[in-house]
Image (cartoon, rainbow, N blue to C red):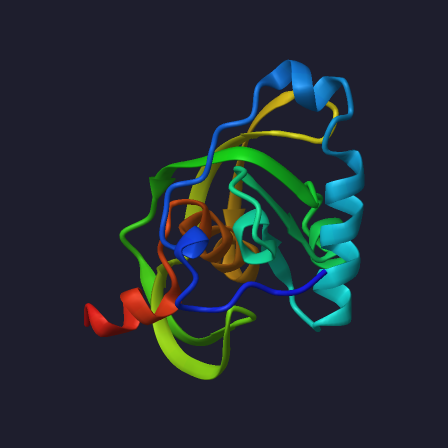
Length: 153
């Protein structure tokens, strides 16, 4: 799968919510597998569907990161419901903006709700690097890229 790059308009729009029944029926199983392969191939730790040209509210994260944090590696229709005021700057990059690395301020802890790959509604907490990756990928699904966050400073 090719990675969609800035300034492609699919990266600037809020993505389409996916019906739970479609998830349960496995309509996105192949896409999720392809996204995971592409993320690995391009050496990313996360990849949103609009980064591969799909207007869908899905992202995947690195399997090892998910396992280490006892988290899901697939997120459908994610929504960050709480963010800690405690934040930190850390350099981030993005597969859709090659060779652009900037310090981005993110909350150290978040609460997120989403639907997993089996159609289960999940509410969970994340902290540290996992929280950062989930915020970065959720931003993509709302049409925000790290350049927007850096330039707001």
